[in-house]
Length: 378
Image 1 (cartoon, rainbow, N blue to C red):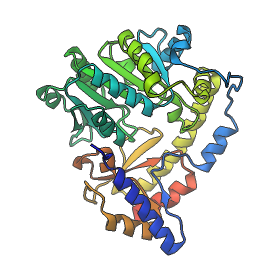
Image 2: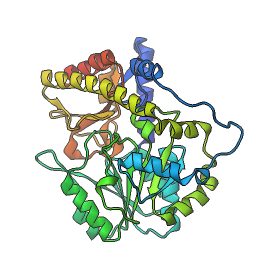
Image 3: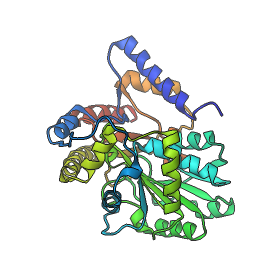
């Protein structure tokens, strides 16, 4: 394998954006973009407090942190007073994906299942480590509930299952009936890898499951706040997995950058909670705006409870399983708005045409560009 699945489609969308700009001299606004809007950045920057009194010259490694610091992070992540998982620090969720993929490969996992929708690079990363990996889609039933393909997982004999919570870019958290199915998978000696890198504080999946050696979960709390440069990731796992990761992280990733060390300190400070409160107020205001637009254009809707990202669906437009360049170009020409189609992240046909929006974007930009999209799709 020498290609990253769907990366070419993303590049071609960027080329279309540039083409429309060259023809009109009007920039195309990507409503799916990971980066936050100017208003949110200014709000956060004016309230963000971080300790810069750190050693900039020495190497920093996860295993050098005192256990009480690792446990403090783990307990805060799961919102519990005592955590039975071990904790490994790493600089990003992307690095965590690579190191966990390596662990699966070296420990003989024969058949890995990625539950879609998921971050587009996970499947390609697992393949690049030589794993036998297949995708299985969440089932969206007639009532709009997301159902785990539990029987398919058992019938196909997967020994590891990769799950994203909340369901990728939707703000949808798993219902209790699905958590019980995950618990059964763990009891069947199936390893559950839980990507909670975008989970809201106190809304994690891992704390709803019994502690188990068959669970590896990873988090990146600043990612929820749309802070993408000063951040860290924490992997919660058994002692055996921790020992392996701490040995091999140095081979694959190297030491923790100073930004990750600063982010760990910030996460444990009261200022993180204050920033999270400001974030939630900002996205709730934008969510109310989206609700108003959906009422005005009822063919458009979403199912999430309101996270940093939600996924808009359209009941009239057909599902796209590949890039329709004419559709995207025509949309950009008329609206000067762009998005990442849901199929790129594994949204199945039951979702119809769908796309992510980032609720940390500026209020007026969402109002203008999402309104244009809704009007264009009439």
